[in-house]
Every structure is written in C-alpha cells, then in structure tokens.
Length: 224
Image 1 (cartoon, rainbow, N blue to C red):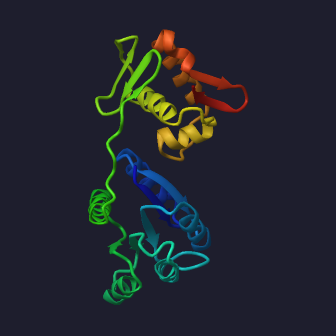
Image 2 (cartoon, rainbow, N blue to C red; image 1 turned 180 degrees about the vertical axis):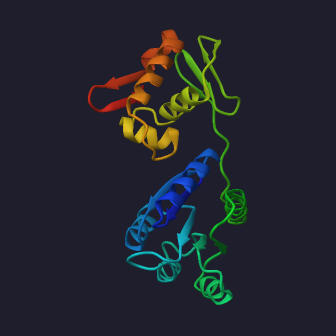
Image 3 (cartoon, rainbow, N blue to C red; image 1 turned 30 degrees about the vertical axis):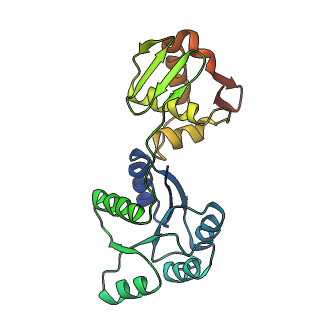
C-alpha cells in the first residue's frame, strides 16, 4: 500500500486526514513540526507527503526546498496545505518543487482525489488487498469474507478490520493503544478495553481458528 506522510501542526486536521486516508487503504505516518517531518521523510521515504506551509521549527517552504534538494527524497511528490491563499504563496510553493497546492479549509474528497491522481502520475498506485490463507482460516479483504475450515464466518466491519490488520502483520505484537490508532483510525478517547472486547468476540466467532490470535499479557496481541 502507498505510504503517506502528513506534516501538519494542527492535530484536528491530522486526525481527519489520517482517518480518511486509512479508510482509502493508505499507510499513514505523521509529524507535527518541520524538524520531525524532515527526519521521518528521510527515514521512511514515503510515497507522498502532505506538507503544511506554516510549521514550527523548519517551515513548510524550507522543508520542501530541502527535500527536493536531497537525492534521497527529491522524487517524493509533495502536496502543500496552507491557510494562505495568495497567488504568490502558491507560486513560491510550486517553485520550491511542490507538486500541488490546496488551501484550507479543503474538501477531504478533493484532497484524496488529488493524492490518488499524483500517485498514479508517479506510478505509485494502491495495491489491491491480497487474500490471506492459513492452516484453518482464510481472510479475503477484497470480498470482505472470512472462512474457518471452509465455512464463512459473519463478522462486523470493525471485527473484520481488526482481524485483517493482525493477520497482515503476522507475528508482530501490537499494543491496545496502537491497535486503536491503526484499526479505529482516530485518536479519540476510546477505552483500550474496547480492543479486548472485540478480540473476545472475534475468538468466539472464529471457534477452532481462535488460537491464531495470541494475547501477551500486559503487552497486547499478535496473529500467529
């Protein structure tokens, strides 16, 4: 899946972007200032960056200039986000190497359409989710189906999302907090026991395949 890096200091905007991008199947990382954003961009090498113009630390224009100047990151497409709407600001941003420019407040649907268009132009398209098959369970994200020993199991949307996420990251341990962030997609005040409740229901429904979900007491969960 395509990796999107959000560099934006307004947490409400970050939450909204993260939630909607994840719904579209993108992998999302985030930074709340220019310095952190530069480090993440260099380390993670995302497929596209959503970059705010007004940032603490390194501002958006300078950050864009540095990224486009570095051989390691020069080909990463950048969409600049800003409250400034003056034509000169847009021109400067594009001259610095930004691929597109969108002014706040913006339509999420429009922004996602622009993200997809740029990724397609750069030859980076979201890969179709692949079916996962294990000893006694099959998970098909495309059809949104789960089968245990050949028999289809009915799951809620969130139960399916949790199971698919764990299975796609087989062997990796996830804390309850990280699962809330990755599966529920928003940093809201949801109790971590919500994860426990969903895992318990999943195990009940999976029956003989429930052993695939392992609990690491005091740590979290993993799929084996």
